[in-house]
Image (tube, rainbow, N blue to C red; front, side, top):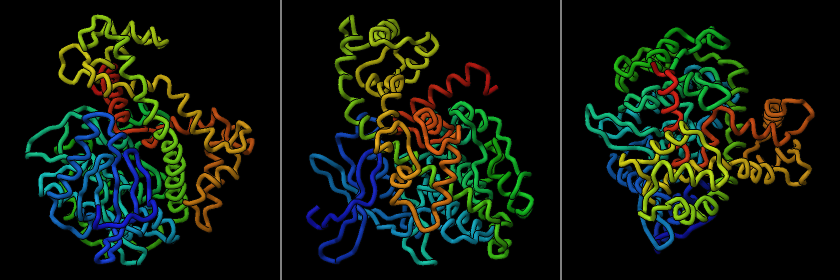
Length: 474
């Protein structure tokens, strides 16, 4: 890292911190993503980072993909030095403009699908396309939109299928939940983003994770409610074809780019989609930020606590001392730890964790499911996040505390958004957020509550198995 000088923190994620950094000899400003080795808790996490670097090196330079300049490794972290994007997130820019049109949505969609097409042409499936993975290069009106995160991407060969459940629930294709998918999932995710761009809300939404998954499986897309009557038939046609639940009938990235709505993007209606869409997008964006802020607090506690004592728990459960745990040992061990767990839940836990399918959990597999096991006690983590916001310790989050929590996200016209979030979360309308209301918000059907990729994978693996067993997929 001798070539670069680290500056202030730009952002913080699950595995590390992104800093502003400057090339000492050229003075060029860049971003350095420093991934803490301590936070890479499982082999899956380590593989994700390695693959991200390999894929960013593999992809040719493209104006809409952030470029990787350098990689370094020291005892504590892996450092990825990348092009700096200072123009902010996709939705933030849209809502800041105030006037938002179908034409603007077409321009953004074309960019996203061009990125997908370039990835697919080079044998890369992104698997985690969502609005916050796109940043503008700078604050200029003409700034390029760039894809910034390839942490869940994989290389694929034509015809190859994948079973691992990854991604963010809102944007996940039905075939991912059915554990049999290919690159078509990226077009589905872009279709979800397009739907949100045109109406301000996600197409598949529910109060619970299971509800979201079932809505995705049903794949019923509402194109009737406001503002859809104002949206052109061409735009609606493209949404339907990108969100076709049958991946063999879904448009490919190339076919999307050839669709009349994108071919004639400059002729797309330039009339505002209305205040409703702007207000919804703004609220969606800000609510996500509130949940993400809470997740950061949870993740900071998780990193220490989730690993603490895992080895001791493993030893406690491994009563036969053979370095692995069978189903019965897991059941008895869970009871010793005070967790009453049903046989079907136990079965799901074993199936999700036993990657080599030998009927046992070895230590590595046990570490991988430990976050899932610990989720039986996440009330404690949620309480810590609540206490973080409840600065004056009254047992409620007041509107001032909400404002403080989102202070660095707020611009001059965000007051109505803060009020809208308060309206949404404060269900008994006493003007403040109780712990119960906070808990409901965090558990609503969104992807922000996944405190780690591993946690997300375990939750959705388990959910997928449950849905298969209760016939939801048939």
